[in-house]
Image 1: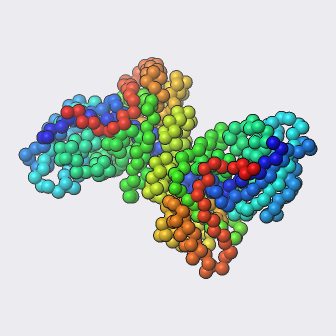
Image 2 (image 1 turned 45 degrees about the horizontal axis):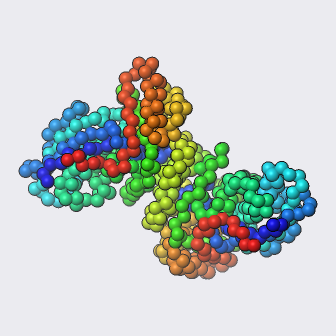
Length: 308
Length: 308
């Protein structure tokens, strides 16, 4: 096999109470990527369709992730060409850079006969994240590669686990077309938090994980609460609290800011409610005069998929 | 049925990272209690064997818990007599008051034909905890009543869930015979914590819950870390760090301070290691000149049990 086409899913990081630790993958939107073995060693980004991103491999997250993989593969003759079809808008807060990094390393791993474990692939893809945001975080690339819900327990050492994903869980995401810089979103966070808030947050994280394993949608709903980060970052998102309130009134289990924004995600039980939640998002955003896109998707359980 | 005898288990609250939210029940030590229907309305504590505790029902946690139950039962003619055989030493940090409260209300509920749900029984038993420590906390009474591992997500409203308990998980507890007042242990805690520590803690809580559901002992072990409370409270326990280190070298998965101390608990996979951990605890404490007791037990999966 000299060429492979993969689907690389969008992802939601910072799932409510699970700030910095819990992420999930979606079936849509997602990028498509073609990765080809090349006579020429190293990595070449042949083209990026659908977004203005660098085709210099050292300045492209897919290129950087693949270079990390090749460094570990340790065969100086191996080379890849990459063509990227972006559907996930850069800066949307639903893991655009993670999808490119994840798709590239999973595709290349297939072409090489799967020498690397998912955890190793996460490490390579994290190097793409380092280029994109200055921090080699795993909370988007882990769900993009492993699928479903993932939990990053620790970075030193890297410790990631897949969580159970209830069968009927859907995501609705609204992406307001405004810019929120990850670095700005990070800077407004407080360095210290109240012990009482921290305890409430870890009670919610434990209950969210339990709710996922129990497929207990009520418990998931009650646990989707972020008393620490959301109150600080909500000001970055137009009409955030109105949006959240009306989505929950429509039947959404709960949600919050996706990644560091500007996208907002809502989880629902079943496609019907997820689509009603999308309509509610429309009704809140249409009068605002802010351009936006809405996506509705089941949880993606497999991560990056081989298309052909 | 006019009389019932129950076993009320000891419990570990504040399970490492799960400070204030995760608790577990043990098969030993535990109290035995006889609860009898009485002609006389209200609650009478007939005797307490094995510990010096008040037999004034208003000053005894079992009495207070039963009064809370009777208030809800709303039949002024109903009365109970209680006889308590304490095996769990008051002040040990392994849920002595919770066992008395839990045993009393579960026993009475059986005598009345089980009109109350476990969650209601937890509420009644929490009134006993209010008498014992000034705060109606649930992190001991929940596992005492429901068995296994429990998680208290929130108090307002009360939201408690049972977690999956891996089959082969054992507890070893050492109880140094020193006094640590819960109020003192509470006072030395900081009111604010670093965001980075809080994130690490909720990553650990999520991973601990996932580890329990996955029966993944490695993940449980790595998650049994408390970066917030243990560093402050460890000074209350003689030789705490040496004890913990040597227990882990012996094969314990991990552990920490039980409740607010002075007991220290360690979880292990299987009875053999749990007993080796007990021997290690002996070897650390024997030279210290501090009296102590060591208990080895599987996780109790049923909570309060009817003996006869």
